[in-house]
Structures are given as C-alpha cells and as structure tokens.
Image (cartoon, rainbow, N blue to C red):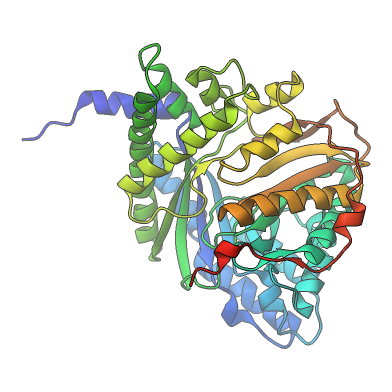
Length: 455
C-alpha cells in the first residue's frame, strides 16, 4: 500500500491557508458566432439563451469543486466572441443593447464578469468595429458585469494608430461617465497588442475566433507561495537555485490548477481549454508580486534590478508551468497591476516606482501597464501616447502587452482612487507633461517590424 506523504499534504494546506494559493478564475469561453442575426433583438435573444444554456451550472459547479478540494475559487467568469463580430450582422448597430443583454445574462447565471465586449482592429476597422468602439463608454457606464478589450496592434500587422488615438478618447470618456466611482469604467477596459484568444483573466478575456464552440479556461495564482518558496532558500542562494525553486513551485501550482480545471470541465460536460499560470496579486498582505522582488533581495520594487528580477521570475514561472501541463495558455507569467498589489501600491506611494520604470518592466512581464490611476486632466493625446508606447513594446518583442490606465476624474497626483475588492485602490501617478499630439494625430499605421516577414 502506498502511503500519502504527510509533508506534501501539510505543504498544500500551508499554500492555501497561509500563502494565498487560489484558483483566481474559472472562465467559460463561449462562441457566439451562431447568434448573428439581421434583427438586433433576435441576436440578443440568441445570445442570452446560449449563455444560459452553457453557463447556468458554472457557479454551482465551481462551488462544489471548491468545497470538495478546499481550494478557493475566487471568480467565475464568461468570455465570449468579440461582440463587434456578432453585432455587425444586424441591420442597425445597437451595441449598447447587446451589452445590456450580456449584462443581464451574466447576472442571471451569477458570474463576476463577462468579457468579450470588444473588437480586433490591429490592421483596420470595419463599420461594426467602429460602432462598437464608439459605444464602449456608454456600455460600460450602464452595465455592471461587462468588461471590454480592443486589440490595436500585433507583431504581424503593426499598430493601428487611428484606433490608438480613438481609444485614448474612449478611455477618457469612459472614466468621465463613471466619475462617481473614480472612473471605474476605465478599470474594465483594456487595449491590447497580440491579444491571446484563450486568456481567462479580466478585463481582457474574450473567446478567440480560432477557439472551439466552448471551453473551460482556468487562471491560477500564487505570488505568496512563490515568495515563501524563495524565502525558504539559504541566504545568498545563487540565481540558479532561485530559478529552480521558482520552477518547482510553479510546477506544483500548475498541477493543482489543472486538476481543478479538468474535473470542473468534466462536470460541465465541456472541453478543458488551458491553464493560465499567472502570478496575479491581490491587495491582501502577503499576496504580492512586489513581495517576490523583496524576497529576491531588492530593498523594494523600483530599485535598480527590478526589471531583471521580473524577467527571471516570468521565465521560471513559464518553464515550471509547461512541465506540468501540455495546455498552458492565456498570459501565464507575472502581472504587475498597481492597484491590485499591496507592495506595488506602497512602492508608488513612497516614490520608489515611477511610471517610466513600470513601462520598462512591461517589456518582460505578462501583460503591461495595468490598473494605473493617472490624473483626470491628462490629455487624450497623452493617453494615446501611453497606449502607443506599450503597443510598440509588444509588437517588437512579439509578446502580449496591454494598457489599463484610469484617468480619475477630479483627482491629481498623490490622491487615491478606491475601487474595492480585487481591484483595490491606486495612488494617482504622475505622467509626462510633454505633448504627444503632433505624433499621435498623424493617422495611419505604424508598419510591422521586419521580423513579421517570417513565412
């Protein structure tokens, strides 16, 4: 008879109870391509009925799995086909109506968020894309559960600068329409380069056009577990030892997530999609990516060496994850959102971490400039410039990058924007005051880099 290792049991319990290991999200990814209709009301009914058909058991099933394994499942979410594609078939564009239908369906099945209210416009916009983008501020201000994303660039197509400029306007207007909640609408809106179609994390989750009819994608998180693992090493351990420890820890976390994901997919009778191993922090003490950097030996996030530490962390996490599963996908790596990470908030508040340093870190992290509050009077051209810089980093490096900045209405540098829950709170950061207008308003596309010609 093979006995279960009591040390392994205690280690897992400690990961969950003390080090904040959790399943950050189970996300039902669902194609709505068969919901197209010339009548927007008919399309809305098809969308609502299909979401209820596939997702009605999602929350209950997640709760059952959570109870059976005693592993917290924090969020239950849905990601759908980019709605610009679905609504484009209608005789009249009423994307806000479709947003309200999605919101109603999300509420009916009890999920936290529904993603996919977006468009893919890296090489240009169709009429439907343009109509959807124009509708984003109104849609996000009139709904509770909707998350929106727009892919503006790719390593193959270059950067759609017309769309970049437009999204600067949209971000600003979305924040203004939700001014009573510190511009929270912009916290549910993300601009992407190289957006993956199987990402389970919000606000960027959508169901890519090459994906199956439906799938269950799982996002796990464990920055506290990684911090504890690093702290267990002898003082002065080498970078080789450090990398191996992170890989071993990522392997364990990924194995746990895949077990939960596959069992839940079987219960729902749908295919298992991918496991997204992302070190997504929370405002809770001890659940911080910034804390990992300190465990590595930096005095605080923002010190010289922070970008190198993040690069090593991201690489080790990916290597450990892909050894544990053949279906690692999504973003998989380390997130550096300011408002959602207690250590990052502290670093910004104390002046250790500037906007420019954050931008440098995005060249090696999983996503990009994430959940960053900026002054409400920041010009549209500056917001568009921020987006353009981040799109360029993703395009050149052939990686996913994103921008989720919040120009908080009525607030200035040093003030705080408070969102609560996993969204946390963010100190308003300073941005460069030099004008970007002459550059941003040129129009057209920034061509793809030479390495895009790799066929």
